[in-house]
Amino acid sequence: MAEREQQTDPSPKDEVPASLHGHCFIVPKKEISTVPDMAKWKRSQAYADYMGFVLALNDAVKGKKLTCEYKVSEATEKLMELLDILDRWIDETPPVDQPSRFGNKAFRTWYGKLDQEAENLVSTVIPPALSAAVPEVAVYLKESVGNSTRIDYGTGHEAAFAAFLFCLCKIEVLKVDDQLAIVFRVFNRYLEVMRKLQKTYRMEPAGSQGVWGLDDFQFLPFIWGSAQLVDNPTLEPRHFVDEKVVNENYNDYMFLECILFITEMKTGPFAEHSNQLWNISAVPSWSKVNQGLVRMYKAECLEKFPVIQHFKFGSLLPLLPVKP
Image (cartoon, rainbow, N blue to C red; front, side):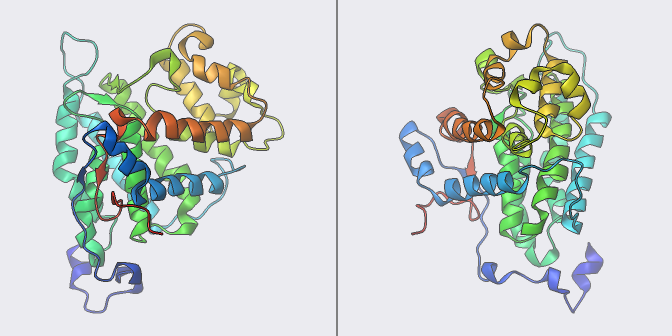
């Protein structure tokens, strides 16, 4: 790090993008404190930009397998290294013996490391010329792994990770041609680490609707995963409840990877423990599934006060009315 900062002649990647000249970064904070505040959020630049980001990635992955070829940039590699560190910390922080089965308190120790190191980790991804962005972007990383008081995890934490990736795109650390790597490498690796956290520390599902919810922990991989399957010549929505199909194809499709994890974590008939997904398996096409999940994501996650009250707003995702 220090050596690069001493360079007198910065390389082009170390220059501040023109769009950020004079930009004032701020540490994000909560701004939705009452239900009526939700109207501000729905009309905000942050909402428009966040949803635009989710949909741009949705379009980018349509019809593509996780195993397809795509560009892997230096920034992507650094994000993978960051996630590998989080994964290693889980191994270094085993669960403690405690009377309650759920919410292992060792998670707080693990989270304490992230809380302390988040800015250092993020500064390995963001070039020195943009170091002013680090405190703002690091907040979203810290928010993306679950709550250390309640030892729970849910779609609001997942949204914070998507916001983290959006911020890296906004400051041009990640580029348009990184879109496939963002979903297939970075987000997929994030999911692996979150599943390991959920299993290791028996985290509670935050705001789960149980059998009537889509999934106890995640939502975005179902959206992007269904986009991957649009116009698939052999796999139809009805196939994802077939264990053999899932086992043969989960390495290629994020949606099936999610189904595999659910069946590992839950017992009993699929229709009983995951009723909402069971209903989705009856939808005739993946494009209809994909459109329905986008609508459901807005209604069940982004427009629900219990989720958005925890979301933080800064200069990159501002709670300001959409620019005309």
